Image (cartoon, rainbow over all chains, first blue to last red; front, side, top):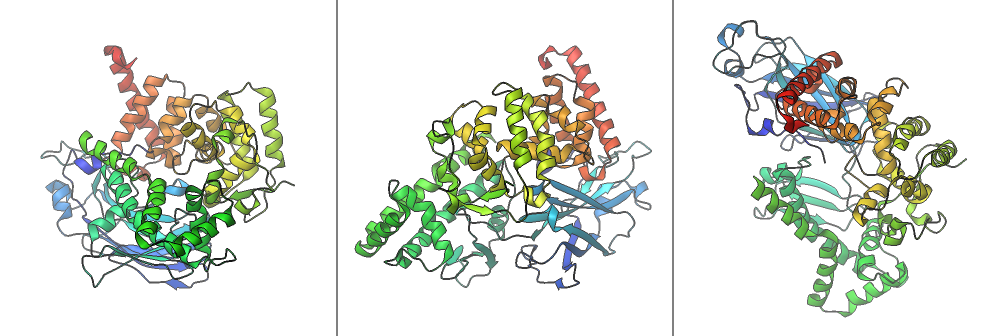
Length: 325
Length: 235
């Protein structure tokens, strides 16, 4: 697990403006000049995972500094000719990629157009795009009142954007499309639509804090632990539904309707019938689904899913982290 | 021609205790073909096979110096893009199906979990035997010059202190780290990596050139040595 700098989240040792940079992505243009402008502004997500035929994608957007930011982060004598730049960073954790693009000259309130090339050969799954306001020079005088004085100091940040390059992976190795939307049933957090080639897990986008945690890329700390517990709790329901549907779809010839059902059965039937061959396990499970009542069926499936997910481990890690803090 | 392939996620069930310990020495490719997929382009593994045999002849088992010799060759022979290398299926194929004997030669069986990571490993950089070395080489080579790769792999603490931290993802930072710290003892290296990481909480790393980062590591190192002189707890 990576050790990331925690201080940023806790406090800055100088005047800092939280989310003072406004980063907006407007579209993605591919090599063949086709463009993609379906943008989920609520989740700050551009999902181009359905578009395969590209080598370079140019991500276009606008960046600006919110009113009053300079007043918050620079001493009065520096505000006329501010020693600052907006730095836009592209990061892909799966491919160890970190690249930087700098916008040095701009006016406060001005929306600067930018374009960042993303090479398909350099990225996988998701790419994060963030922007920060940074100092570009040491202060040439004694800085009072807690303003940052050193070159490179980050003075403000933005809300992160995500470009989804590949479909998110199901634990079974097949693909589960995770999408967000507002639900009519306000209290409902998620809904699974599994009667498709690729099942869709809909999450209620109105719960923005929950969505943020579920999308967190943190590898340590409280946010990571909460995310793991949330995911396992949702996964429990998802696996249960997927397994029951797959079980219902098994035919006498050990066939299923969808490819993902094979993957789910492969993953879970080895836990349920560890000594049986694949076909034998499928037929046994089919029999069980058709011959037993609902409570027995739920109990059996629940045992398998709990064995797979190890929820106590994630919960214990969360408790340990909470006590540590 | 021995083509590179990928092993599907579902094959994780193959990692039995007997396999991890080496009692069940190898898994036949024919028996497990349902789990194996072709890789999207042709990469011949014959030179890698030969080189792994050579390393086994040259080094005693569990010898960490194998890493420094293997990483550059592995990177050259596989010649993957970052996108391709982030596909764990190819690394799982190499460890589980192709050369499980080499994994057991490099790592002594500590526990089931420990050995499983050496064969499998998904998210943590320091897990799968081959992928960890490929990524170290990828992040440290410059146009085919692997001298920094070899340097960082001379000591496990040197590579671990960097790759456990986010700055290893920015090549100029990693190059600066190796240049400044590669000759230092464990206590200095670990403390320098820790202090540099803390410094990153207030700067955006990508704004800095290698020379600037090198200067920063130099400053941090000097501070640590000064602390070291006045505080023996760092020793």
